[in-house]
Image 1 (cartoon, rainbow, N blue to C red):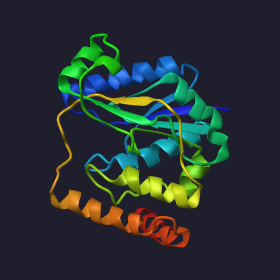
Image 2 (cartoon, helix red, strand yellow):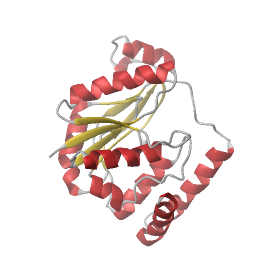
Image 3 (spheres, rainbow, N blue to C red):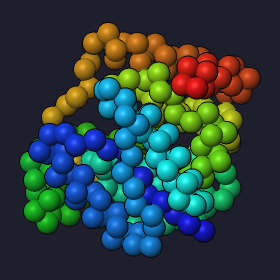
Length: 227
């Protein structure tokens, strides 16, 4: 069983660059025998959806049976990550966490200085995150349609993929544990035309929740648009 760890990545701000190095080192420590890759789809504006698809392709080309897709600002815990990898042969999407911990700026500085993440101040913590880190087999990724590259900029692509995965692969499996998000300046573009368009596209996935035939139609549009 060959595992690839893929970070969707394009160099950016000093905070982002430092986080990438920290997360990369963390993942190499957790999974020293894995294939470690950075992936950039080359879109004019960095595309997390496109770069995840590109990362899956690179992992397949390298002979990986299982792929861990981890954002460059997100730290998983070892035990749930290993559990997710061990169980991924079932062909569904696995999330190696049940709790999202978004550290504040001060909390991130404290954690990078050596404080346990659980003891650091947060801006946001909740149970309903769907992104950050995904564990899946490449063939399952494509059966779910891959990630919709019509999502540009920030937001909604994770939720859409989760909806497609649940309907086309089977219910997503969560593993008890936490992921820690490192603070950086917001890039969400809330209220921008692109963010609104992303929300409208995601609503189409929401409207098709639990309806495999309807979701296949939405996924087919995405596949045609990116062919």
